[in-house]
Length: 448
Ligand SMILES: Cc1ncc(COP(=O)(O)O)c(C=O)c1O
Image (cartoon, rainbow, N blue to C red; front, side):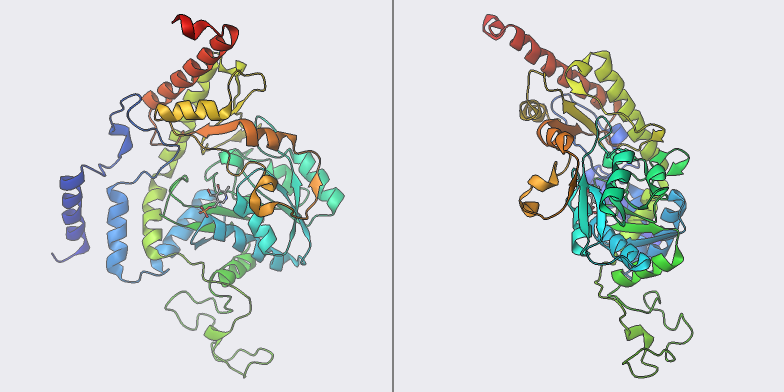
């Protein structure tokens, strides 16, 4: 065996022989047995593309961030329509880096306020807290699951906030273009890669945006994340915080990119102290690796297909539930006006008057092998980590409290096929109708 191509062929043979896995488009061909085949909410879809790229990166022997990472970064930036993308090791790290870098770039001070939703993923909020900023909480609205743009703008004005950091909930865009015309916006785009609003892609609207590539997300690199921005100076700060807080911007294994490695002068440092070892920020090591990036390069080739499959699955489930009258029991999710979401999942909120609870229906779905998830943490302020947090709340949190009680989501990711969509619709509607019949006639079950 004398080259990577031969090795890839050999490994393909082993995988194919032993696992019947990874045909290059794994899930579409999977046989579905209703009630037996599990329907997950999310998952990675990978094939030989990913294996080939990974093997190439292994035999490149670089293994930290290098040429695969640079290639992934530039292709990701191109896909979203931004100038820069800095890959890091998770969406949560990306959130931290984005807020730290924007804070420095815009001269925000400790204690400055940032508007965010109370209903969401914890590390959006944690990035604000860990950067010594103060969250101002706003509620979200149904059926969009995002904060209303005018409420956000009023909250910014009332609290003299420096900016806004929130997620496009489960892929559904918040009105970032409108909010960004009033204040600084950082987008948590972790769940919304390839969503758009108006003529703009989410992730390319705010001053910075973040992505996650954990397997549940639109594409995966195993673990991974990225921070996107248009602004070269901001990208440099993001990379500095990511790479130990160093001042030098040489890529791994490169020296003297600035052309004056031994000629810099910093207060208190010896004149000409090696720039590679000058630390101008208190940073960490949040880099990813070429192995992760290689998988990401392969995944990007599938991105358009993934996006259209998510959208098609969403439309099929939505149409199915509507056709069988499920709006009587559920608030069905709607795209934010003028948006085209790449849906992360299909959200359902049980109406107040429905004859069943969230736990009851989720338990039943689980018994039928249909996975469900809550909308992350629900009202974050009710979570143990944030009890007693001293932060302002703008308006009531009524909707987030309802979501905490009554909302769940099912999958619409590309591993779910049409049969699975139809089965989920059938099981949900059977359950809801049986519960309604039982409520109307409590003796019915005894008669059967
Ligand atoms: C909206 C949002 N932001 C951030 C994250 C964190 O991403 P990661 O798991 O890569 O840290 C997630 C994770 O699912 C998320 O949904």
